Image (cartoon, rainbow, N blue to C red; front, side):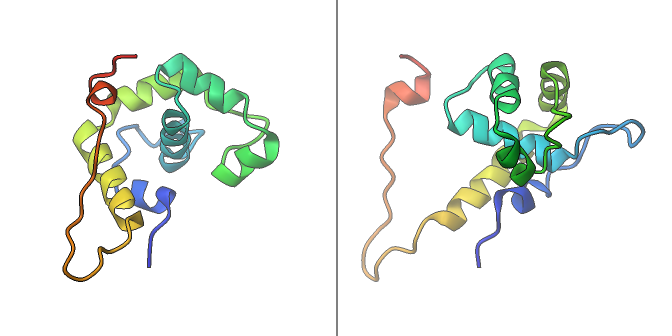
Length: 120
């Protein structure tokens, strides 16, 4: 059974103090991962993606349609998260999505070098 992205991201510890939390960690991380997958790379772009979400999509992600995370909140939270733990959580989720190779075959993943370097 595969686990959804929010459940996989629940393994990442929340670096914030409990007091004053308006947005759950998994909600913000899920939205940020979705925005990055959609091609939004900067904190500002991620916040714009979240702000432009249709209300029904925001609700599906767990975001209150009338109270979206701000750019500053997203930036501070992503900067405080341990990047290795976030990478591991997303990697585990992605690995669960890859179908098992046929018996006797090997799994190979091809990646474009320019994409890895971030050149355009």
